[in-house]
Length: 200
Image 1 (cartoon, rainbow, N blue to C red):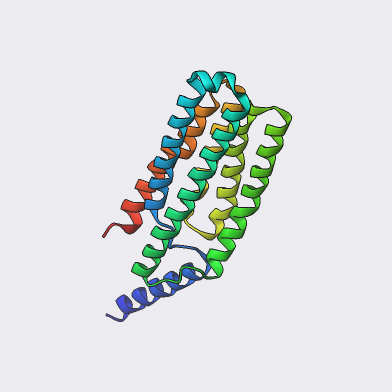
Image 2: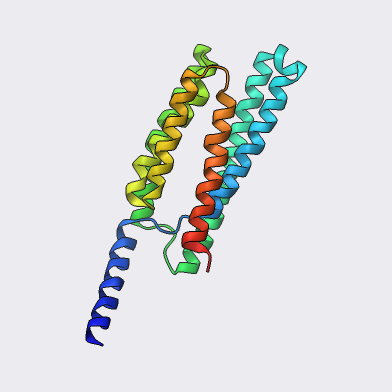
């Protein structure tokens, strides 16, 4: 009986230490919805690019695509906040603590850098490299943040980087790789996280 109690005590200590250094409130549902938003945005972008206006009005198409990407990002962030807050309450954890702050900072630096780099590519007319660049920098951001949240986020980051590098060499299919990276991979990993860590 004493041995069993010691094992339980050690498990409790380990969980407390893990919670203090890792952001564990991240919800798999937010990943699923982010993936759905990305697939919807990719489909709308495809329709625009294939339309007559998309082929003749380059400036208007670019503004439309940027607005679409921004809207997708805002929806994903809002949904992530909603489900993560709900998950934190369910687990009895704080939504914003040191681990969440560190995860956010480590995610934001490569993400902001990638966003500015993508804008520079657009200004230079290198539109074909925008999708690969966003995938690579997003992957780097995930790897950087994975030290402060679920370790599997690192695997997702590696896959995003690989997709981005492939997209950089497979010319003309950036939107497809973007949809796979931000859409399908988010849904797959979101489902895995939900069924492994959240579903009760």
